[in-house]
Image (cartoon, rainbow, N blue to C red; front, side):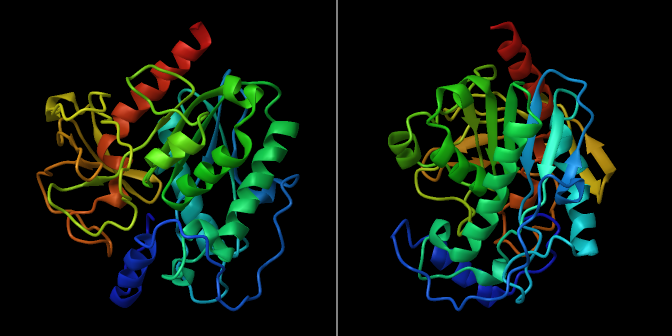
Length: 328
């Protein structure tokens, strides 16, 4: 949920309560609102980015929540300010894939944070489903018209990762898609034990080089609480040592935290911070050398820095998994 400067505290409490409500199958009682027309993915204006095809692997990237308005309920993808914010993320997040893969990133009518309903599971929210259906339509268009049989990576953050979790649940019980999947970087939301049990084609990463697997984590300080994206039993892999156990990864293993000012690198710091998995919470914990603006999240919840803190390690890891996929 990058680039959102302020989250109203009342809404934030509702957000937490709503996420903790679990996976009850309830029908939303939110009044339907006007929603803009579905994107036409045959038009380039419906894509945040389509890179030249000069690499053997693609990445299908879905951006995090950037919209928090009361009305409309879903992001208007024609809004020039939101389009600009979204394009900045092609560098600050999708940039970790750029050296290894061709980037394809659709615009989608994501749900506004203001439309979260504390009485239901987010996956059942009608406004979330509008955004997810856009992502699903874009992915199907990409596979049918752009992919041309190349292996691909799925990548997202926050609500973007949520949509890709839904996509993997719905579509990836397909041997063909499973064979083409290099890896899925579903960062900034939670993959739960129920996902792995109910959707056996969703497989957790276990090391730095396995393929066809899911990489996921949620970064926070030790003892931080009330993260709205960290669900019970969340799967976590440490992006510094690529283990899923509690082995501490020293900051010497951090090849570079990269902080951005819009699409430009503001500063890059090697050996910035170490990391360790907290098995009780499923969080990736870290002690930072400075206080960072968490932009409305609870103190110590570093959600907006999930890519920045481990940027160069992610970049190196993407290259390793791509190499292993092509050499297997």
